Image (cartoon, rainbow, N blue to C red; front, side):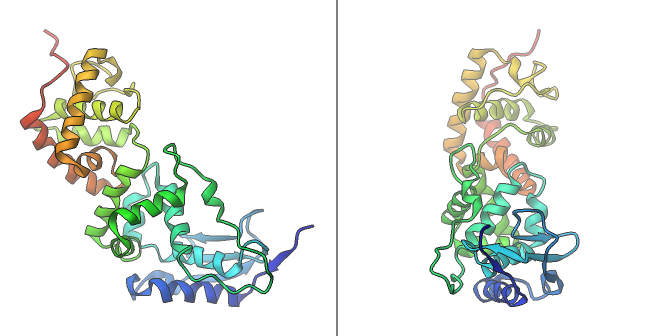
Length: 293
């Protein structure tokens, strides 16, 4: 039988207070989290120390918390979720990396809070999310820390807690360079949308080249008539090689805009970047897949 902390309302209050003391300047005065319920409860799943339910607007703290954790720190983590701005959540939640981004940032920001005082000389264990790894090798919190390193703490907090439009865009662009660069049906839809008037083939070929440059295979998905072939994977090896080379050249010219165009977790940022990238490709890109004649 393992010994455990007995959680209390004081732990919830301390966790909330600590978050507000550290990050309150970035949290809107009308945040719905100020009206959220917070309870110590037995009804959490086994092994779950705390939980924020965005639908019921409730922070829950398990009655019993493992000794290597601290109830107030667990509460702080959940209140960070509670205070996450709806605009930040809404603009990222449909992306495949949302859970890694969300939990990674919450863990990283929790670890920046003052460590709660402990009565027993038992060191706090690292959050379990340090054991969750991206394909890049980064843990979820390590990737979040890299985002902060790229944009700065002020911009990160303005995005995460404040919902600032420009800050969210900066965080999304940084994430596009840090998280695994994968094929996406959403991105392929956006390529079609951005190229409806002009530039569809250039964008589609550049997308294929960007994936190859990131060590990914060509998608087997339908090219949506943006290419003279049915699927991206129908490109011939020599064509794919030329697409990769030109994509790398475009990335050198466009920098972070290139990455955001294909890999931004925020759709608004992606659309803006695709529009800018399209203009670059219209000037510089040479089509690699010939028309069927």
